[in-house]
Length: 228
Image (cartoon, rainbow, N blue to C red; front, top):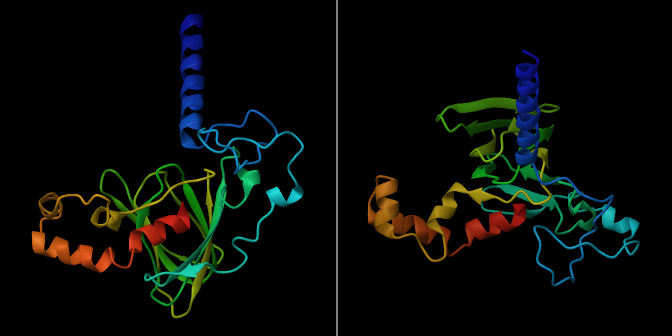
């Protein structure tokens, strides 16, 4: 009996440890590891600056103090991540800010490396995600409310109010990555037209029309670089 209890406890601990390890970036092994943008060392993240060569400015940023650059979806996205805030390196977190025009959309996309939680600063938005069982979970969220999107699932936010809206976004990754659903139409090199037509149950001609609307404006690259 004692053996079985110890076995169950061990399995529980292993399960918790595995879930924690797979839920976000690896834990740091030192107090700080300020990103060294000039290093030629390739690691899973940035190499660290030498000890005591960092400054307080490395741990601060005004990257989301103002709205970001506008895009064709009617949103402006600003990001505070390890690429512009070196003190975030190895800390497993980042922030962004999304400002919505009326009818503005943060289009369906995924973050392969992070769970996301949003806080509504202003406005009324429809937020939703799709599970791998193809269940659509969605809710009207308003000022002061928070909503979470599980890691890796397709999700979006849409301004359904009569005025502009804004949200703050937190990720459990220093660089969550983003993959818009529409990026399938703008890959380099392109996914073959007949494959896309079969996948979306449409014609090759329609696939080509969609590509023409997306690629010249560099829509997916513009959006992806804003969030990465």
